[in-house]
Image 1: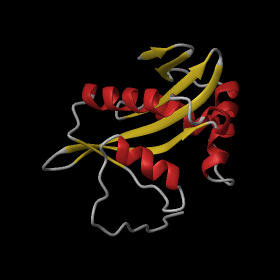
Image 2: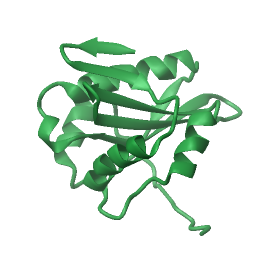
Image 3: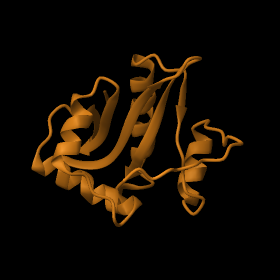
Amino acid sequence: MSTDSQIQTTVIEQASAEIAEQLNNLLVQLSPESRVEQGRLERIISSDTAGIIVAKDGDKIVGMATLNVIQKLAESKAELEDFVVDADQRGKGVASILWDSVIDWCRQKEVENLEFTSRPARQAAQQFYSKMGAEIRDTNFFRYKIK
């Protein structure tokens, strides 16, 4: 997808224990209890409406984003989850490279809007999203736990 110095982005096309482990190393930086199992990783990869974009420095995954396309009656939108850059790579432009790849993926899927949430405590993330042109929506976000 994109390349800048050593950082390259790509959509994950094959699941492996090594990839799951590297993604888990990033996920815990967002939420200590979060983990991806290889079966879920395989389901996301095989989906026509979902994708995982990673930023890599050589063979090491240093950033990632999970995307899901949602078809609504009035529009198509993508939901962004798990957008994270490794703590050791922050402030080096990795997030911007990853963001550009996320936007490219959304354009390829012909979605009109990209939506996501971000905890208020993540001030640096809030500033980054604003810098990228994202706007805070005036809405309430609900969750109903099924499982």
